[in-house]
Length: 377
Image 1: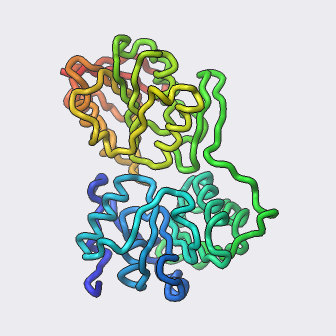
Image 2: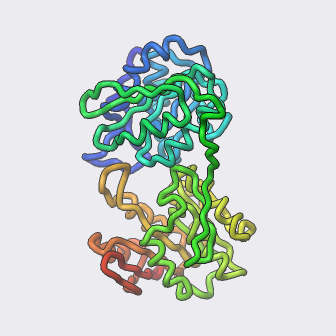
Image 3: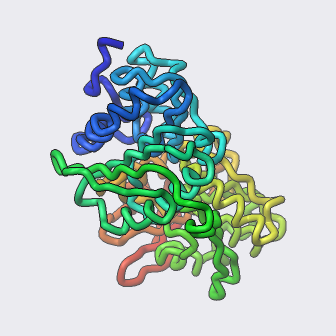
């Protein structure tokens, strides 16, 4: 443990690159501000939420003596990176991974948190802390100043007794919240949220960290305009990077004999997609998987893949995830199968789709988005 160094941590198996880091100043600041609370916390009462690649979890163990740490990371790749970094630092077995629920937070005395940029995600976390943590819990949440807003203080303050903003350091800041507000003073927050989209005729369900929440983002809505043309004879389809599962449920509703796999590496996404499928009466034909780029789906096993790829990695604009998903689609498609993709037109993905999958043609285009279909060679 004496040899632990943040510099040893890697992002792998997540996308790596020159402008993508495994640790930043906000990780170090959270641990520094939590020093006294960590020293006083009994074994098994330290919880880490939103640790990206293990800096908070492993730092709490190696630098502050925390034991039996419980952790929740929304991306599966984050869990995998934490496990790999723990092995690299000889810290395997010092933590356990949990869903975002009571098993994570019951009796927690210290919660270390990378503040999510989504206020809905922060609200869901704060509500669960208030419902299950120790009455004297201390929450130390950090982030980069450019991504923080005063509204974060307000969200924490709905559920926790006091919220204090600490001084910024190296363009990072920490919010420290202590204690839990009386039950009568807390909002009756219910997650996942749900909303009926009258245009699509679907009920959309979303946990706080799910992309776009209960809204259907404009790219997905544009892609769904081509739903009827997508591999009409397909027996098995995949909503790759499914988010809240809108595409998966729309396909299943429109085609009563179709089996759809909805896969995403986000725990919030797959939980949302499963609830969306139930809300629309198609849970028997929508199989939901938390997976990194469909890695557990057999090769050449589906007829249709539908994809709205992200063009960000965290807060950084980066197309690495999209290219990874193009490769995944090519692997799982049967020969002659189709990949339908929507993308921001300025990204010029068509050559990459041609290389990864096969012949690609434009199906639709508006002022912002392009829809293409690629046929597996």
